[in-house]
Amino acid sequence: MPSVIMPKLPIPTIDRTRKHAAIARVARYGTVGLLLCSFIATHYPADQLPHEVAQADKLLHFVAYLSLAYAALVSWDLAIGPLRPAHYFTVWLVGTLYGAFDEITQIPVGRHGDIHDWLYDVMGVVFALILFRVTRPALSRLLGILKPEVAVN
Image (cartoon, rainbow, N blue to C red; front, side):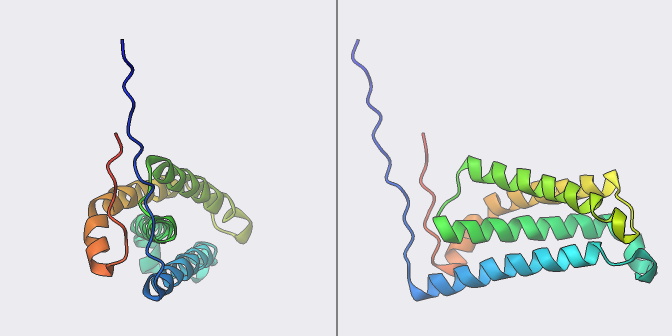
């Protein structure tokens, strides 16, 4: 029985224009900035927070981790081209572990780690993964620099 030889798919490449480099740099620095702002906000003493922040705590966790994960995905896509399933898994894993780390490290600064906050963190990461997958084609057209995804059989 003859064996079937699968054709090799081309490895996606990125057009390394100045525009691309500038957008990639802004995305990377923006992601790091979001991470720092998020860390500072979650480690700010609870007794000094406005009452409204405490009421919107879960929503803020969800939005923060949605933003962080989405920014990380965009930055990574700009750096290496279309993301593969392993990249999505890595963003989920790092986001999940960072969420746990974030909750645990709040304890020494007089706040409390909350499993429900962590669950909202994880939900934000998962929603970002879905949102990025759905919006990537539009983002590609908007920025005009992301390479189209190549179907993998």
